[in-house]
Structures are given as C-alpha cells and as structure tokens.
Length: 110
Image (cartoon, rainbow, N blue to C red; front, side):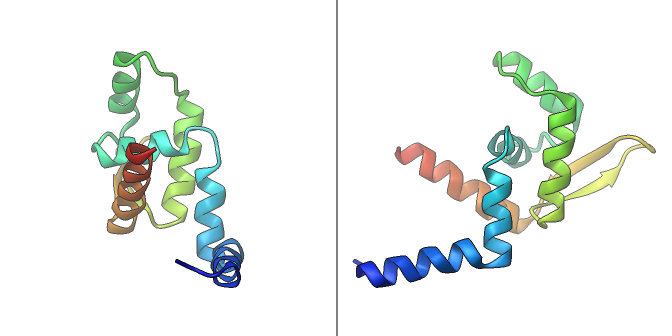
C-alpha cells in the first residue's frame, strides 16, 4: 500500500503529465468510453456503430461519434482509413486496446 505522500505524488504525476492528462480529459467527455468500446469490438465505422447502438437502444449521434473518434485518433488510441472524402473507418491501436481493456476491467469490478 502507498503512503499518503506516494499516493499524492502518483496522482499529481498523472494529472500533470501531458499524455495522461489528455487521455483523462478525453475519457471525461460524452460517449468517449462508448467509442473506445466500439473500437474494441471493431465497430469503427459509423454505420456499424449506429447499428450496434440502435440494437441495444443506446444513443450516439454521428457528430459525437466523429468528434470522439478524432480525439481518440489524436491521442494515438485509434487510426483512421479514408472510405471516401467524407467518411473514415477507425481501428483501435495497441495503446487504445490497452486503455479500453483497462476501462472494461475497471467497470466489470465496480
């Protein structure tokens, strides 16, 4: 177990580290975890993501999907492949798999 000082130091490191704070800020946004999980299930195209969400009576707008995917890609948690000039297909990166997997484990344990 960590001492209070060690715990504070670790939290401070995560909150002030550029990469960690950027991931934390992205995860705090609306539907960010949904989008990471969609990527983990290989549903990185709007058509598949929308079908999955509708099937389970969940909501996700196309604008929110695109915004989160762009942020996720900017953090190197996903990469995009152009389908046509307006559409992209997103796939999860190894780092994205790690983050999404850890979030899944956390939520399973809660």
